[in-house]
Amino acid sequence: MKIDQSFVRDITVDSSDRAIVRTIIAMAQSLDLDVIAEGVETEEQQQLLLSKGCAQFQGYLFSKPVPIEQFEALLKPR
Image (cartoon, rainbow, N blue to C red; front, side, top):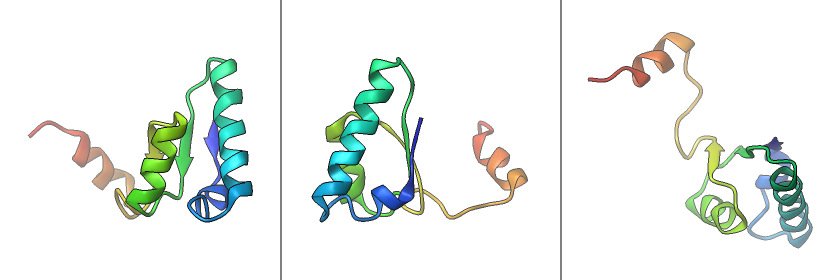
């Protein structure tokens, strides 16, 4: 299950977004689904998500979007 970036964007300052994220994570856990947060741009967002039980992320904190060939090259052992 994916947490949309619109909820992640203001998670550190908006209590409503934090409540929605908590609910999404709880729902995913109760359905035995993995959960990933998109649009993670700061370490503060990542830490808050980790504390709520989300351990998978995507966003500019980790990398800008890259072509598939470049992404696959990053996955190959060196």
